[in-house]
Image (tube, rainbow, N blue to C red; front, side):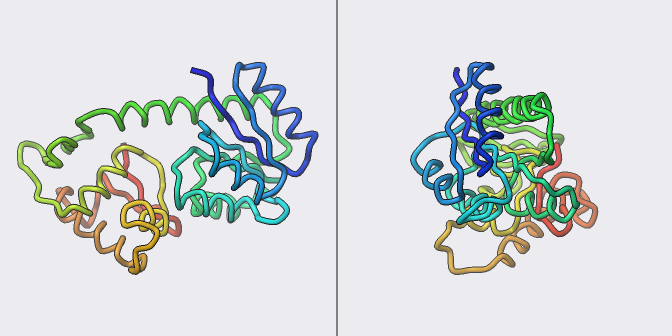
Length: 228
């Protein structure tokens, strides 16, 4: 199936080059040149992946990424001229899936993009599966049941939703804000401490040693992820 990509950068020559290269790979490419235009395009269209520059007019790439995560889990690769680690951490905290530093080789962009598409294809397959299995944990979607080994684990509705999201997206780091918006909903009046409480309770139920978790890991300063 043909993949649809959105390229967002205010440097039109960069956009033109990326667009040409991706179209040569048989992809459909839309373009946007500022943050507001990008956000409007994402709300109106279904994309398989987004290449998003950090430094944009009107809305920064970080702000666009953060707003997109309120309503979509589409894979996002950030593009930036900065190479400091703090910028990479910020990108991940706002919900980005990967990070490429300018100046870049277009071959690297295509390789990273294809890797993201392969992973998202696996997620789509997992999302359609009635059962998720990782190590000792088995999650049955149809009956909303979870087992640790042969023992059924009694989870609340939100604990199940949280675990299902993390297991479906193995190794993807979600900030507390992302998890609160996705699992509890954007209008939920609580705060991010709700996420910490549920993660702690989940660990107590599915980890053999909750103080040294194997499955639900913390990315310090960023958020949580389910380790494959």
